[in-house]
Length: 337
Image (cartoon, rainbow, N blue to C red; front, side):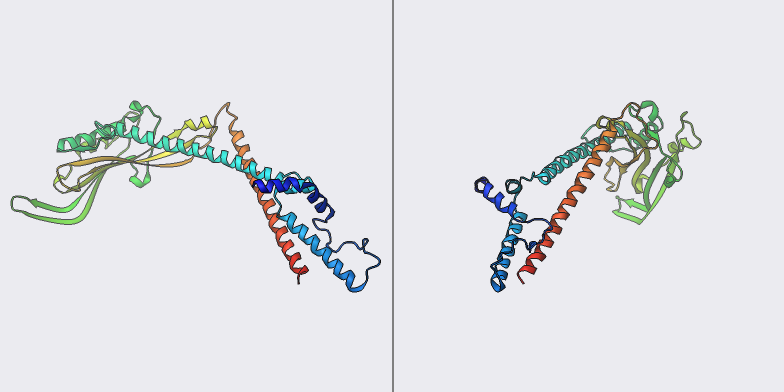
């Protein structure tokens, strides 16, 4: 690199004189005929003409593969394409950083809501501690606790959530289900068992209202669990929320729908029922967003347009260089065939 720069500086003046004396662009390599020597005729003239064409082609090839520094010394041409590439690298890097920060807020928002749901709907939940029950009364207690917390969510939650009436859940906002074997007779005394592995599912649906009283909402307390053949108990419901913290990064807030499933797993039939909460988030644009007095979001849109414009201009310049290289290759083939 140092040797190249040294050669660029040492041969700058002579290279500039040589390259400026040559024709570039779309000029005819054959010349206009005005400099034809009068004393040269026949084969000697043609030989000299071929030598001039060959020298001009060599200069064209050399100029085509020159670095921006060499081109600047040769013709005083400012390296605007190099500057454009550096600008593209900078603004694309900035855009990637902003995109990463935005995604980080999305992940953080989901994780924090999942932690909040576990504290809200799992009885006695402690961070990083496995949840499990060992008696029938404890299992009923956890089921009732989750349902009652769900019905009272607007009054107890620090977050702003909305219920979702999902047609895929029999038109109910919350679905309490148990899965169990069709038939199971287990007799440890005689070391015998009789099990039908087909699985049955029974469910109870609940629809919350502001007053908390809906016909049929008390049915979950009459929900009898078949412990001797129980596989698991699940509580499914959905909640809506809005991530307004994106306003800090001059972005329009997104709307989230959380699909929450509480699983009480009894597959092992070991006397220990494991309890877990799973949360799947879907994101979409909010309807009719309105952020009063916050015009900085237009700056983000302008920046995105700038990135697209610079990338498109860079693409055009790269395409032009490729086309010129192909044309120069055809000129070389014509001259040496």
